[in-house]
Image (cartoon, rainbow, N blue to C red; front, side):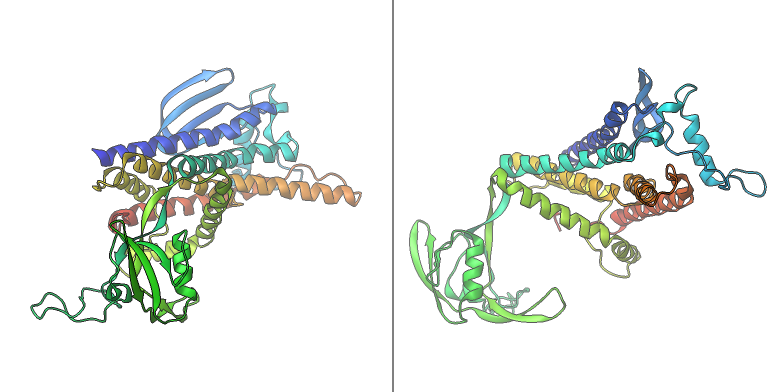
Length: 430
């Protein structure tokens, strides 16, 4: 039951995000006088609709997006542009132009979207993604400042028994209870889970980052360590080991190793820290989108058992599983407030993804229309600067064949991720 509740919360939040995204297009379009006949959340069969004024508002059955119909989206074909094939049928671009024109009732031609100045068209198309960005930052701020984020403390949660990890235990017991291994430095020195680091090598740490820095910058020699255990100060001596660790460029680097891990606690941040968190989330999402083609290829290979699944990209099924696991995982220390905060964080990450993905400069995405407007502004500006005639609105309908390819690729990506999320699912609980 809790699992389904988590999924339901995510679906409702996602639908609300989509509705607000489309509202980000609707409001400026109406403000600028564009004829807007339809505003819908979802695709497919209509579940509910009501007409108010000149606009029909409604909800459709498939909650995978939404749309606002802007009358006169595409400009008519310029003189000399081929509009029909040899057999007399209209080209795909001409089909788009005719459908766009049919969305304008008689007498409303002056309210066509393409007649707006370029800057107004860009404002309309940017409205949706900007709403998603604002939602993402607001949700991040609510979680970070109101609920708190999990932050490492100077109290230990784990102490590695072995230098190399695995199923071994120091010394073994000769009865099958474990094979001998080289003890971890912290374990050998007597550190225990629950110990609070008071000082390390003469440094008094205020955060876990200070502990890491003290270990990383100190010589690989015995370090005096003071911990608080059951209210008492305990003096210990830890001698770090040197281990080779992989680097991002594929090389290895010899670094000090102690074998300790921090306990985490909810830490409320100040509003001044939110922009940095938002930037980290935005830049991370950009990297994911830029690397998406290669990642999807890896996902396809993983689906057919050719390699392990990359957990960095999941589809809606995978995101739904995350929401369900957050709501249902059996962990007494995982409070309802923390669960709610993690669901909000998940929804915030989805909104950041919608913001970045919609700005890809390809039709039918918002970024494609923005790119068309910028190209038009560039052409008109160049013509004005060189004394040439105004070239008129950009004929973005000519890109419509590419739109079919983009839509096909997006559908293929959706299907691939759905199948992958079922065949080789990614789980938050491991």
